[in-house]
Structures are given as structure tokens and as C-alpha cells.
Length: 354
Image (cartoon, rainbow, N blue to C red; front, side, top):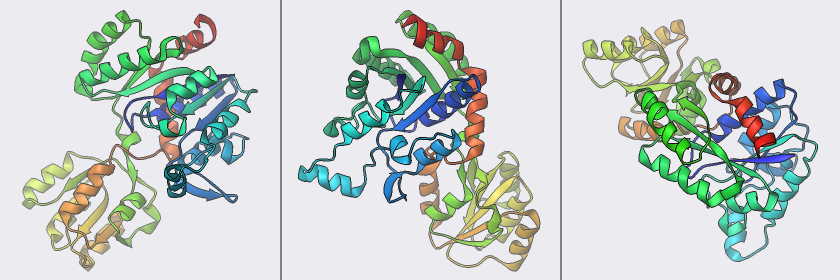
């Protein structure tokens, strides 16, 4: 059994996306795969235990037989935080070591650590410490943010030393893809860094459900409640004249349109384009004309008492940072990894070269 730690120095780099894609493809090849998330942040009560909701989803999707508290051995809840600052024992390190060590029948156990290499340091469960303790290997998952991305990769490589496997560069904007592939990758290879994959930014993987949007705006669903689990990839604000708005709406697919409840003209135009839901601000109900049109088009309407600026701010902070909790995203990750990740090179590097 080889523990492979997917690490980065920033949150939301796509480590669970890569884990799912790798695990699903490796299972198809006959490998026995395990999974552990060391620091849970989405507490969920399951069988009288507090576990991480995202880890539980991955357990079920990968059809893992291990108990939930093995895939999610430690959740950093408010209670855990209180105990930490009071100096009470949490045994986080031992729980994680046990969770990984008990999966000796696996070929590879993918381990997701904190959002940065230092997260969990106060608990003795930061990435570098656990890799050393468990004789694991570190695979960097890095989003493309210019030269700082290179700094993170080079710095983590030096910190890991012989435990370093290689890197994946994720969420590369289309306009930078050729530059990264033809300039950055050769530079990193010259530094002794194996790059197993370069992934373009993928809208579907950054999408959120209409249900999530409903929750974050503290809204009320007006119609088409059965569509709440559909995914929204983009959002637009309808605050211009109708002619400009229509051209604007036509260019952006699979979107949520945010506008004031009084802008009936904008709402009707949005419903004539690829709109997944309407979010109406101002706290009042939309007109019957809009409701009936939305029902005909199968588009949910959310009404919220928040103002447009606040709604946009909340959605902007959410997009691109959604947890993987939908099967469509998992299957997309499998497809992307199969196409863009050097799986054979990864296996050779993991089992033979190293």
C-alpha cells in the first residue's frame, strides 16, 4: 500500500476532483483504491459519528467498504477547535494514522490533507509531517496563478525531498494553456519536476446547484422546485436596457440571472435564453406572467429579500469553490483525467522508478 498525498498551498485547487478522476480510472484497471480526508470541514452526523460530508460522498461513489470514520477520521468542528485551544487531547494524528494504516490491502490510498501544507500543524497533522510519518508520496495539485504557482511547486518539492512525486497544474484559463504547456512545463521539467497533467478550467466542475444558490441567498423557491439539483455554471446581473440585456444573455449558457423583482422585462428576456434559474431581489413575488413563463420553460425562480449587490457578492465568493457532491462532476473528472493525465507515467513513477 502506498499513501499518495494530494497537496497544495492554496484552497480549492481541485484535489478531490483529481482524486476522483484517478480513483475511478484506476479501479477500471483493477487497482484497489482507498481514500482518506484528514481534515473534514463539512460536519455531518452519520451513525452517531461526526464525519465530513464530501468525504462521505466520495466513499459512496468509489464504493469503499471502509466505515465512514475511516475515510473521514477527523473533523475540525467548533467542538474540536474549542478543545484544541483549551489544551485538551484530540488524538487527531493517531486517528489519521490508523485510518491510513488499516487499508494495507489497498494498492494506493489517496490522502487529502489541509488546504495548505501547514494547515493542521497545531494538531500534528499537516501534510509534510504525515507524509514523513507514513512514508507517503506527495503529488502537488496547483492552480495556475502566474509565477506564484511556480513558486509553490518549487517550494513544496524542496520541502518534500525524496517524498515528492510530481505535479498537476489545474484550472488553467484557455488563453494561458499554450503558454503553460510550451513554456512553463519545460521550465519545471528542467528543475526535475514531473508534470503528470495540465487541466484547463472546466465550468462544470466549478458549477453549483440551484439548491446551493437558494441556501446562500436565504431565498424562497417560487416554482420548479424539482429542478433544485441542476447545475449552474455562470451568473449574470440583469441591470441594463432590454436590447443590451438580450445580447448579453444570448452569449452566456447555463446561467443564473440576478435582477430586481420589478424588472419583468429583463426576467422574460432571460427566460428566452439558456437560463437555469432566476434570482429576484427585493423581497416581493414576481408577476404571474413571469411565473407562468418560468413554469413553461422549466426554470426555477428564487425570491430573496437581499439586495442585488449582496447576492452577487455571495455568489461570486462561491463560484469555483464548490465541493464535489454531484455524480455528474465525478464522472466529468474521470473523463478529464483519462484524457489529460499521464496515468501510465504516474504508475511507473510510483511503483517502479521510485
